[in-house]
Image (cartoon, rainbow, N blue to C red; front, side, top):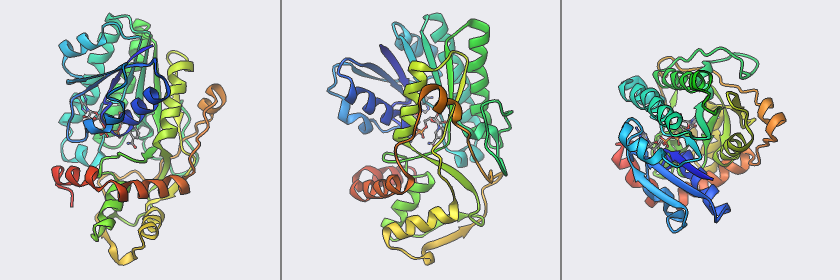
Length: 324
Ligand SMILES: NC(=O)c1ccc[n+]([C@@H]2O[C@H](COP(=O)([O-])OP(=O)(O)OC[C@H]3O[C@@H](n4cnc5c(N)ncnc54)[C@H](O)[C@@H]3O)[C@@H](O)[C@H]2O)c1
């Protein structure tokens, strides 16, 4: 199977590409990535020698490049996106451009070239915030940030291409990912790397916001199941099964690096900060056999160890993104 992976130099996309190529000598993957501030080509270093791997630097909004790389593909796994909520609050333009227009350009090309399957990787943030219970795939979309609104727009476009053109689209919506190679602006790697460097960590509001943490390798397992077994036109939630509030998460990270609460700086809450995310992922568990393998305790310990051991990976990225 020939697969086009967009955003394959990012956190989750690169995990997907490494996992797929390392487990299958016959796999063929073309990565299309613009290498924005969060794209790191070195994330793909372990697979550059694989005979089925190729990399194209390009923008998913560019119909010419997309047309060229789409020709001959059997499937698309679409990760490329502007992905950081805080940046979308500062400026929504690049989010609408990449997440909405870029997805539409890809869908058009996939339809034109008769691609067999298009997996659109989305987020639970499209559902908004939920005070109790958990979202099923039928839940109405109520995104609150420009990021999640742009992802909701791209989800609807993807599903519309299925209904209108019969394109074989599957949408996945996952909870918050963590693990190695995550850009150090996101809360877990930002906190770990600040703490390693003896700095403070910025905790939003009162720290009551709850997230369902999903290890990136479990997320990629879910995407693989959706790619091969998902039903066309369906949505699959992918959760981690671990709901933790940011105050508790901060305590766990302080403990992991042997730091105290005096290293925590309480900062003004994020505008429109969703209070709680909670996914019901029984559909993918029951229909496709999804079962997360990594416990939050083990996954977090391994993630802390990875950042401790890979300063040369994250230090230049923090400098590049001017993260303190
Ligand atoms: N990280 C999470 O917790 C999380 C949770 C839910 C959903 N998601 C979704 O998963 C996907 C991947 O997220 P991530 O955390 O790996 O993001 P990331 O920011 O680490 O990586 C994004 C990648 O996309 C590339 N890219 C951005 N704009 C592009 C463009 N116009 N053309 C081509 N490439 C472009 C970047 O260079 C980068 O390599 C996104 O669609 C995101 O919405 C992420």
